[in-house]
Length: 429
Image (tube, rainbow, N blue to C red):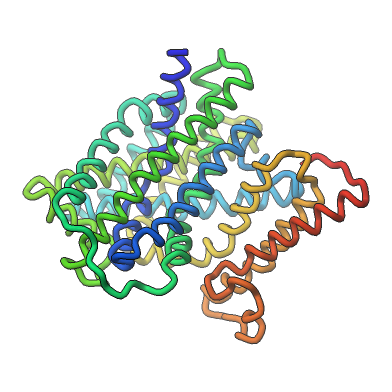
């Protein structure tokens, strides 16, 4: 029992650090600042997409005991391969480089005169070293990096909560719930859950070969719940910190500047060093998780080639150095079209894999995923500057909130379930 508890907490800490990266740190405070006294509504939306769905993603992986490929395989093998290539390409091209950009802007530039490319080279050199020593990742993340990160986070959150008054009343942004939900997309946590879920499966197999399948499933599911609870606590704390700071900062302040301002205001002279450590730890662990997951996938596709694993890791780090030269806000803006295209499908795949197998089939997977992709197109086209006419989109429920895919996907699930049962379809999902 003691062994199981230790394993669960080790894995939960590792999961938290893999999830908690650049976006997770800089997005919540600005949401709180904009929402003001309505911060609870924006927190609810943010936590739905940035905590609830990612935890379900880990639960899905614990049941499958497989990789990202297995998550989409019920649609078809070719679709799953294409989906994996898109997800991993996005992951190493946007959220991974963003970790270096955030670390430099908030952690290094205020303290040291160092060119961004020099920092990014050192940063991804260390990431590459961690990815190279694959079997040690779980211990490094769970025993060392995450406890340090949590200590710094709770120091900041505690200082804000006890130093500042409760949020002042002001006119919040409209649609705070949907605003929080969509901003949760920018954390990449739903995508992160299906990427690092595979990393966790392999890490558990390496670290705990003595556990049987049922023990591994329970271990991962419990660790996912604990990691989700940690994320929930930190997000609510950071959103509240932003809300309580409404009298001190303008609404149009950048995400990075707001976090820097809140930290300096509440932690005094040591603020910049604390912020630098906090940002660096949060970003570094996420970059390790993304690049490890991508390298694991390529290795599996190429016959468990260790050479392919290391080449992939090297290429991903080079991309990180190059793209990491862009400013944080620019990377966030560039990511929007990609998120609008793949996030809804990822959420649907997670939900379908969490459902009992008796509720799903290959036919249901195909119909629901196809419907989701179709109704995600208006948001994607709008994000790249080619919006569909209002006469075409106004009749789609929730389209005004960029959630036009949700009700069609739910209806498609219901109708396809009825259809397959009537025809007596009995397929494996």
